[in-house]
Image (cartoon, rainbow, N blue to C red; front, side, top):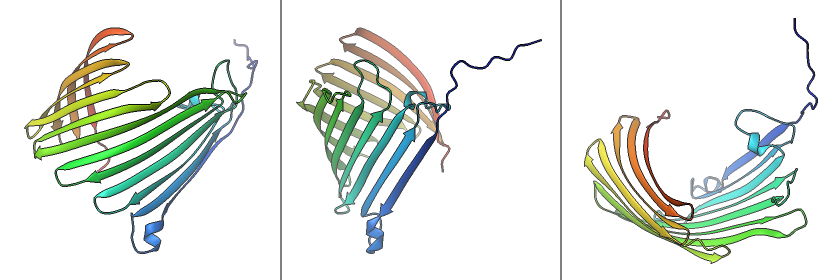
Length: 231
């Protein structure tokens, strides 16, 4: 025999999402040149499904745009906002994030600049976190089987998080590549080296990673595989 038990607290809620993308350039005979989009997503506190437990009681919205200035020059921008219904002590009720990126791409080299700003507030309107970062990245491909990059991130306001990164990828064989990178920053340093074996749509990789930050020294070895389902 068994006894039916009614949950003490019955959760009930709804979820919905609306999104739109518009290719303005196509309206004027220049497809993919001017694009805008936006979305609004709402999950009530009582709504629960697989994979979105952390999003219960949130409302997310955002807008984005892409401007293909020339065949080599591209400008991207996006702005996102998240609002939370139920607030725990010291947690943010609203968080905003904005990104502006410019990229210039040539046949064998590419440069990109990015500005990012994030800010969050508690229910009383007090700023809990505010930070803005600027970054510059240069990538070169001097040979078909060799690519290198250098990147610098600079803190413009808020908690300091400056970083300098260098990386290289060398294709040893048609299906085997070696990758290595290093990062030095105000919050710690890291380095990693790995091998990637590509067979058709699948990748098998092994990476050795070393980190030295405020949490201490750590070394890890990572094995993994990836498969591309899309054509």
